[in-house]
Image (cartoon, rainbow, N blue to C red; front, side, top):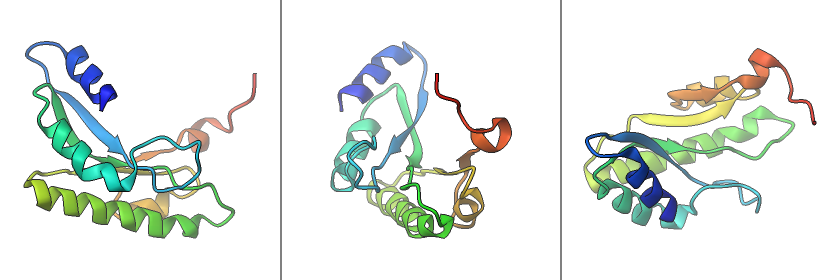
Length: 127
């Protein structure tokens, strides 16, 4: 939770910083985010920080040839959001999931934020 503490401090007096918690639902070691087993503990900690406003959850699924394979990941994140929202009696309206190749599926599964940089600007070029 050191990052949450840094964000809480950086937000400054009299301000609330809206944040999402990234959940690592792809077991790939290079992925960021909290382990699903740690989510409740992290949510509880963030909710206690006076300058952070927890708005929801986010995830990045494994990149696969078939975008439909992301659907169970999106469904799982939505279920996790609903469970911690009920557990802590707090609204978590945001679900950030889905990118250029799977955003339609993410929207069908409840995404409120998507990342579509590649669709708008093209693939990244290595420098």
